[in-house]
Length: 362
Image (cartoon, rainbow, N blue to C red; front, side, top):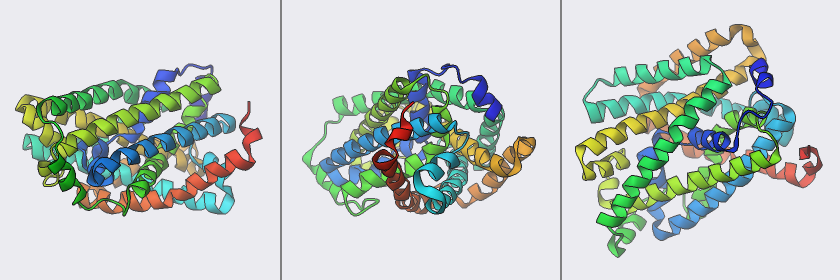
């Protein structure tokens, strides 16, 4: 992978692609389905807005830091970043957490696609899982440029579809006091909205560091990385806020289904529901690509590029088999646990700004 990074290092990647790749790496089955937002933000009523704001600030600060470290270290995987920021011992622990999560996320996205096609189209989940195994495999075979392009093209469609459903909810179904109270009666992913905001940003950045690190090497300068991280964080915030409001105004239905946003889209019409289901699958694809790319990039340090294609194929097959456990079971247990483990990454990145700040300068 190193030859790909060096070839494209002449500032080819602009602010938009940095931001879009950042957004696309974070979104996926949990985000766009509305289930993550329901558990982490909507279940706290109006306080969920503060949780979202906190998460956006963390997305910007830590995302920018990871991009800078990626550029400084000429990173081709997450390992250079976490070893620099957290040292050998804690860096190794975080490396293991990230590597485990990357494979787990790939498996979860494959399982999520199976659930979507079965629920919305009446097709056997086997075909959905097979599709989401093959597409990321082919994309990652093309290298980091293929990953960036595939993700950045899909992100605008994602934000447009989510915002459209949100606008519909605002016009047709304004928020009521009863809905806010019902939302607050639900059990959230964590005990308090502050913890949810931190945890949400944490596990998503554990996922994103595998792509943001190598992405930083392709940025033109600090300004591009800064604005890319800023617009990426704001884009994520807008998307989360739109889903938060849509779920909150349909809270009675949302708490009874596994994919709230598809159900909300169905309130507009069956055609809209089908279209959003297809968009949701595309969003799942962006996260699956990020997971596979990050996991395989990590194995390059042990196997070298000679066996890269074999590793990509073997990893995809393994994730396909693990996906048979089921989407909801994997996400419910895995995401919050990885979020708490990701706090170590946050501590290391803060340490860089406090004690290694001079080394971030170009």
